[in-house]
Amino acid sequence: MRLSRTLATGTTTLLTALGLLAAGAPAQAAAPLAPRPPATASAGSGPVCWFGACYDYVSGRQITDTAGASVRMMQAAPEVAKGDTSSHSLQELALQSADRQSTVEIGWTVDLGLNGDTRPHLFVYHWVNGQESCYNGCGFVSTNRNVKPGMTVGAGSSARYAIQNVNGDWWLFYNDQAIGYFPGSLWGGSYTRAQVVTAFGEIAHATGATCEDMGNGWAAVSTRSSWIDSYYLAGAADAPTLTVSATSPELYSAAGATPTSFHLGGPGSGPC
Image (cartoon, rainbow, N blue to C red; front, side):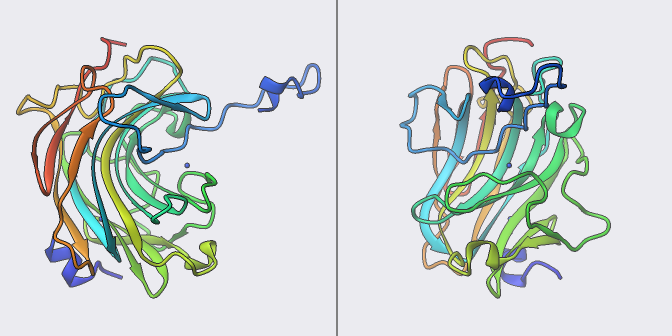
């Protein structure tokens, strides 16, 4: 299956902490931190700390009603804390329901705990009724032998990421190739259009200062910084118009914003 002509040319994831492990049993590795579209925290309010971790964002968001969206993004290999399996740096596109409880996500991530290395990897994720799931699975149906969630992507290159609802299922696309879908049955058929579209960079880390790069580590004002552009909506009455903000602009900034693009990035509090 190919991305629809309209969208293509418009070019779219305890026991030890609770002391419940049996004595002498090996500790379970912590699950990778889920990618979380930005909450409603105001710009410049600082990291959003929830579910045992802190998240910083530079995001472009639109409230609308749409069957799909796409963006083109720079892919990078941001520095993350060495040996830290509980942090990540990513860029992604997310579509959500009006109450933000149902979500479909696609993007690239640098996540040692998830991927076993610090190269950028393609990922997909979804939420049902506000409940996190898992990366690259938990109902996802892969349909492409060559382009699959979890594969490495080229740092320094760019790619188009897209999400579109087709006949009730949420299909995901990488460079206009369908890679698979989340069946609409995961939501009981109740989630077929999105009302919140967000394209963003995200840093997840333990509480406290963060050294992780966002994007390629360059501040957004640099012409060398990472970017998101060519934002497009499918089956929406509204024109594509992103509102861009940053939770910690002194660490991770936005610049050069237009209705369909922006630069983003930064080195955090310093080298890891």
